[in-house]
Amino acid sequence: MGELRELYQEVILDHSKRPRNFGELVGANRRAEGYNPLCGDRETVFIRLEDDVLEDVGFRGAGCAISTASASMMTDAVKGRTRAEAEALFERFHRLITGQDGKKEPGESELGKLEVFSGVREFPVRVKCATLPWHTLKAALAGVDQTVSTELTEGPKAESGGA
Ligand code: ZN
Image (cartoon, rainbow, N blue to C red; front, side, top):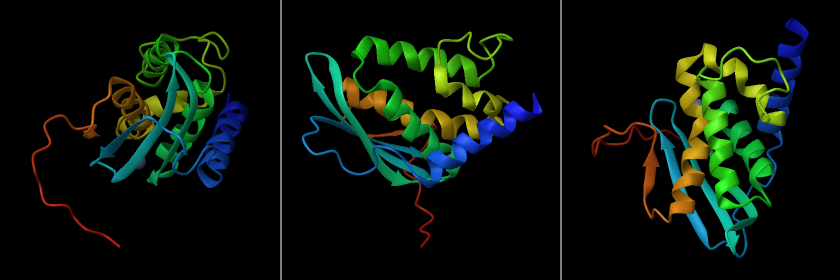
């Protein structure tokens, strides 16, 4: 299991350093912004939705390694899928990283590469980082034209700035 964990960390590191589908998506007809105040992650997800198919997906933003890697791998995973398939994938991903998936062996959850995030369940704070791009994707699909936050109770607090 130790080797597997190392492999998982390598994949996450690779995606965080060289995110796929990064940048504003030309021709996008859906977009949403996501914000995770606990960590400071901000991401904008772009979708070119045609006939209920996510023809192209991209993102941009700044966040921690987990949120960036998750967004990168999410865009790869949902590209070419239907809206229903993408939402079902989110459900499975969410069960995986919150540990509601039971003790499945790698390869059993139909998540493919996304299984690298299974270790995140041991770090509850990081679950928000990993799910941020997915919540944002869902908002974009729903046509929600506002920033989605991982913290539902968030008030109009002043932002802490930062360089
Ligand atoms: Zn984060």
